[in-house]
Amino acid sequence: MKKLIFAGILAATGLTATANAQIQKGNWLVGSKLISSNFGLNTGGGYNIAIQPQGAYFIQDNVAVGGYVDLGINKVTNGSPTEFTYGVGGLGRYYLSPGEKGVDNLLHHGRWFLEGNVGIGGRSVENADSTTGLDFGAGPGYSYFITPNIGIEGLVKYKGRAGFGSEGLNSNITFNVGFSIYLPTSKAKEVANDVRN
Image 1 (cartoon, one colour):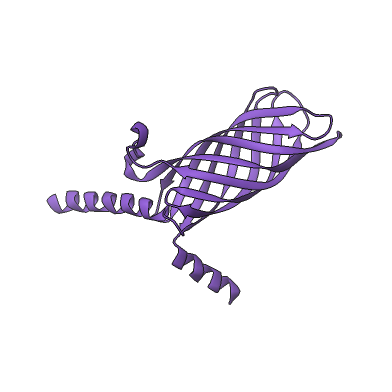
Image 2 (cartoon, helix red, strand yellow):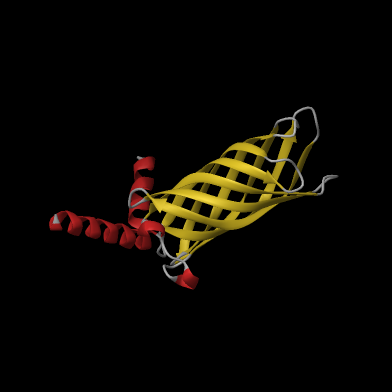
């Protein structure tokens, strides 16, 4: 029994140490948001099925900057037509350290983070005009490490789009679910070499 308890403590310590190691300067993050639920602020709520691949580089411990591409389908619950969304832009993440400002790790297997983005995006509505504008957003999230290098993520985010045409500001609060793969620099080089060969 003592050996089983010791093994459990050792595994938990290893995952915590690995979670800290994955967000160090020089490492990479690649992943995607897959599903969103919208809580409309000036429109009705609804659901959003989207693929938002993203990649970022840790410029220093706990801080990653990179970019994203957004392709999605929105269906609003108030009877509005389906709309297709698209976008591209930059993003930044800051991972909170354990114990920082009262923050603790859930079960010591993940990290809280803050994410922000800005870019160009738009929407195309069935039987209506399309619009393009400035996309921006910010919110807190949590990455739960199911393996030392793979995190399942939840993110609550305020998202806005300021239209360049006749459409003004559209905004909503979303709950996003996705995943991220954390690659140490040496591992990222191996993956790149495998892709090239």
